Length: 240
Image (cartoon, rainbow, N blue to C red; front, top):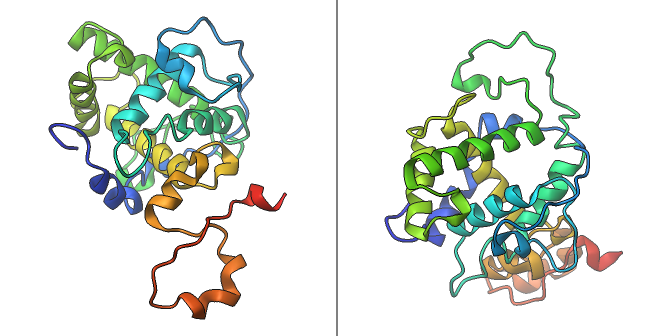
């Protein structure tokens, strides 16, 4: 993470390697839908146009907005993470089977494990992120005097660095584990097919020149071999 703004190049370089271990094992399912409380900040309103929250509270949506915009700030390459729909992506994931731990073994016993053993907590992804956001906000209040989404960009970055390094003290699990899961979710939402809520307007695909569904370009592979690909990306939604 950079001293000023987290560089886009660094984010892309980490896309293939970050989020292993704990984040990779967080596979679950549906959390009960909640009626969102009044918006804590304007950040909570940047989820999606006319789309209600399915799982997140307004405070949680505000946290994700601030966190994703810290990881993916708006620049000449693309809009910010929240503008690309990452909060909507996360809300849908946590409201579905993934958020409820549908394929996650949680019968225990739960004992301290080694890093290569991955996720070892009894929490579903929905519970894990809820606890992580609560702990992150508590750390931000203790260290900077405000919840994470109310911090200045500089203080947000400092808080994220503390979580990334594990220096931020969380009560129930390592802050580094939470950061890795958060970072992995940012990558997934930013690069996934837009049908899942993130990558709005195919922003990341346009940025890297990815055409979308590769099966649709089998007949033109030779035509573009060794040349810059300059065609309109296609999402799953384009074929529905």
